[in-house]
Each structure stands twice: as structure tokens, then as C-alpha cells.
Amino acid sequence: DYAETDPGPHRRNPVKGYRVIRDAMIRMGSGWKGPRVLLLVVGSKAPDENFAGLDIRFVSHAGDAEAVRTCYLAADVYIHGATEDNFPNTVLEALACGTPVVSTAAGGIPEQVRPARVPGITAGAAARNLADHPPEESTGILVPVGDSALLAKAVEWILSNGGTRRLMGIHAAKDARLRFGLDRQLDDYEKVYAALAGREGGRRV
Image: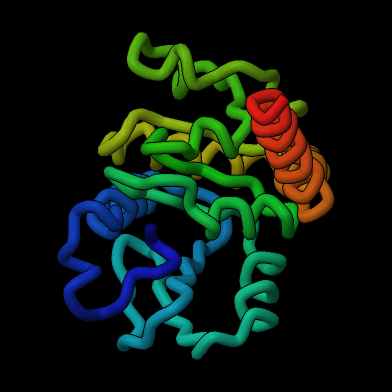
């Protein structure tokens, strides 16, 4: 994912999605009329970049969880462009910090994000099953894997709709706490162990 991209091999790794996000930002920058956009790449160190009116800064957090949290809280949107993924912690971290997520629908990400229906972005056949909620009740936007054009439109839409973006952030933090919080995980583990113990007990009787 983009947050973990570094200036070495990972930036050339198509699975990490750096090129997808960079292309999306170039597309967006060419027609963006809003405030100047600052893109933070958290987790690596490299020279700052500028293209198409967009600024890129690389922030090396050196394992400092509070520094990473500060970046999430400061961001208007977290962008995840992976072409392949499992159940990425960075997406959950962003949601927990109340930061809406714009992501490709790779791996388990559709299970993490409650995606919004946005005309012109999620109406295509490839994305129809990824858009289940009105924007004000969602936690982000999902687009098909590798689609930098739709990724750009999704980022621009969120940045242009401040009121809805704030509602997305509120829902993101609440949903992350309810579905992925420590208490929920402990409860789920206890249920699994209890079920296993019951079956084992049944076999011994």
C-alpha cells in the first residue's frame, strides 16, 4: 500500500500501488481547482516531489505509532492503491482515526470499508457491487483494482465534499471500533474457543 512505500524496490513494486496512486494524482492535478494538495507517503524517506500542482512528502516514522496516528488525523483522506492485498492494517488504522478511505477493492479491503455510492464513480458494472451505502453513511469509496482514473475521481469527490467527508470520518471511527476494536476481537475469539471446546467435549462423552 502507499503508506508503506519506500524510495527503493517498493516504489517499483506494482502490488504496492505506488504507480496507481501517482497516476491518479497526475490525472487529478491536471484539472483540480481546489486548494493545493499535499500527499504524505508515511513510512519512508525520500526527496520531496512536485508534479501537476501536487506536492509529495515522504515521512519516515521509524516505528513511532504516535507519529503515524498524527498523520492519519491530519489527513482528509487515506489513499490505498494496492493491486493485491489481504486485510491491511493501514486501512483499519485510518478508519479508526476517523479518516475516510479511498481504495482499490483488492483482497479483503471490501470487508473493511463500507463503500459509498457515488454517481460517475461507482456506477460502472465493475464497481457496482462495491457501492452499498449512501455517502453520508459510508466510510470511504472503493474502485476497481488498477483503475487510476476512478481513483482520481474518488479522491477529488471526497476533497470537494467537506460535509460528507466529515460524516464519513465519524462513521469510519465508529465502525472501526464496533467491528474491529479489541473488545470485538476478544469476544469473537472467545466464541470460537467456546464452540471448539463444546465440540471437543462432545467427542469425549
